[in-house]
Each structure stands twice: as structure tokens, then as C-alpha cells.
Image (cartoon, rainbow, N blue to C red):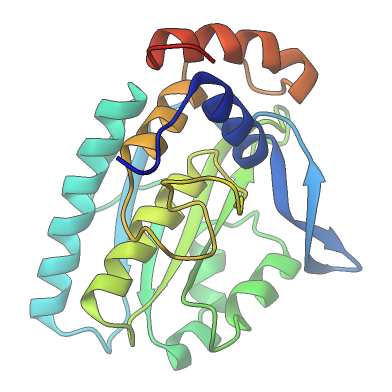
Length: 239
């Protein structure tokens, strides 16, 4: 109740989260720098496949698989894009690894996505201890604004709620909401960590992202008039 979302706020938050990047590649390394971007999303169905390091026991695996399956169904409902969990043949890989397994993950990463670059492998295998989780999405070589694969890293040392929070944020980001915003509230796309799990506001962002009136590759100025129209249909009251 203390975090109302107006049409104007929804449009502004979508622009910041979907049309700006949190990191940029510089000198072969990913550097934290917010930069304007284009709208990117999946066109093909998303097949989310969990994989576990040897350190994860059977009970924890079963719990995390169930959480990811239920979340996949929710994302499909709110985005209206085909999204489902699979046990093989995935194109969105969620890797549950401890720190040592993460450091030695290069062969697995190359197996999952043969086109992965060395800079991305270094970024994943050297994620610092204080980074709870992360996601890397990969675009089509012929359609750079269309995602065709993604890899999310979930650190298994974390408590249950933190792992679940990582799943909610990283998988949603890997669908095309790559940035965070200090002004987005209530939202998991805010580094203050006030909200651990996907909110109604975030569901609206996903609904906008996969609205057919938008197209991959749109820049903020192109998308803004359409965003206003979409927001009017999602949020009641004045902008």
C-alpha cells in the first residue's frame, strides 16, 4: 500500500530497467557502468534447465527444482511468452554451484554454450565472494537484440530464502530486464534488497517487455510512446 505504481512511474521504471545495461564490456572485462541500450527479449520459447554441482545434496536439489518449476510457470503466465522448465535440451541454464565449483566451471560453460566468449567465462568463474548470483544472456549473431541463450549462476552456500531470491531476480533479468534502478519500488530490480521476491510491479514490467506492440531493438525514444499506451491499459488512474 505504501508503494503505489502510477502509469508514469511504470514507464520510467521500465525504461531504466529494460532499456539500460548494468554492465559494459571493456578491455575484455565486464565493468559496472550504466549505458543506454535497446529492448532485448526472447523470441523462441524459453526452456529453463537446472544443473547442480556435486556439492548439492538430493533434498536441496528437489526443493530447488520445485521452486524453479513453479517460478517458470508464473513467468510464463505474466509475460504471456512460452517458458517452461526442462530436464534436458534447455536454452536457459540455471547452475547451482558452490564457490569451488564455480571457479572450475569453464568446461561446463563451454559445453552448455559453445559460442560463449572467454571474457564471459572469466566473469563467471571469477565472480567475487560477495556476489550472491548473476546471469548472462546471449544474443543471436544475426539478431543482436534477440536472446537465444542464458546462463544463471546461483551460489549454493546461501540460505534457502537468499537462493530463492536469486532465482527470482536472475531468471527475470535473463528474460530481458538487465538493469537495476534505485528508484524502482516495489521491485526486486533494486539493489537495496528491500523486496526479495518478484512483485506485482515486476510482473507488469514483464508483461510490458513481451507486449507484441514492442519489438526487439527498439531504443528508448522509439519505445516511449508505445510504453505510455501499454501502461494505460495496465494501471488505472492518471499517469
